Length: 396
Image (cartoon, helix red, strand yellow):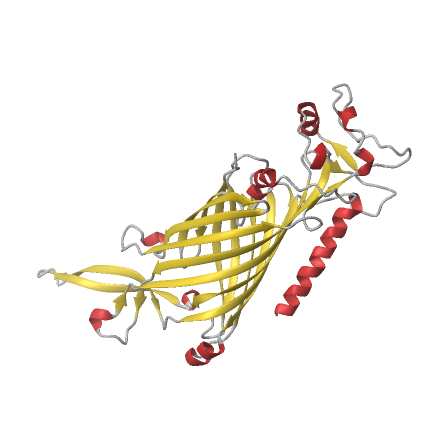
């Protein structure tokens, strides 16, 4: 499984680099203005490396997470995440005990230097930017230096405004057509959560319990974000080049390895447990009226064990403001604990769609995804629909 994931990741990286280079020449060594990247690119992602707040809803937990990102030294950035939430079903928040859940996470990101991170430029329009600032030139194809060459680009009104204001993006104020941002991440996370359990084999007084459970994880990530400059320029059909007229808004890829203390809560079933607290009988009719206390609780053996998880995630925005995302992962349980609890290594995948705010303003990103995962006890596959939203905050 790990070998397959690594091969897919390598092939995808090579093909995406070729896609950029079909249209653009290599960049100079000037580093990307990463603060600008945080504003214009990372606010499009529904999770990951950006400031803001996120709401996540799954069948096991509902939580709100806050993120803060700050530069610390040269290419190093620090990120602090904290979340609060509940493991209680949203439908039961008002009629049963609310069980808390919280987490804290510290991440260090390292922005990789060129050529892993760089801009791509179009040489045929490099020396013609001053012409585009002329208000008498109509919007349309960008003029080229080579007669007879059909340019693949057209320019947009926002570009003219940037040129007039002297704010053209890219190194040295050049117009870029795409950029690739690559970085490494090392994160440490701690989780605390209370779950409701029902165990019928216990004595009556202790059948229902709400114990605290703690977990931890350490994770290493390799990330790449390809972003095309579709705000300033657009791609036209060409006769003399081999590329395609269409380009996505962005493509994000992530491969990570996580080592930590995990549990099988996702594989346990939730049951509605009803307790009759009192009963009243009408003497005349014999009708019985009962007062019932209802709770949602997990049934089954809760297990905690050490795991190593391999995960590959990809996000593709085929057009602006709409993105498709998917994730596959393999969870390997330590041999001793797997044999002790008679568990099996598991796999999971998820896929979905979300809509994101474009540009450098804080806008709500909202998405829904379907997750399907194996039960480590029964080896059955279980699927659920989940919700995730994000409110990015562009850095000042």
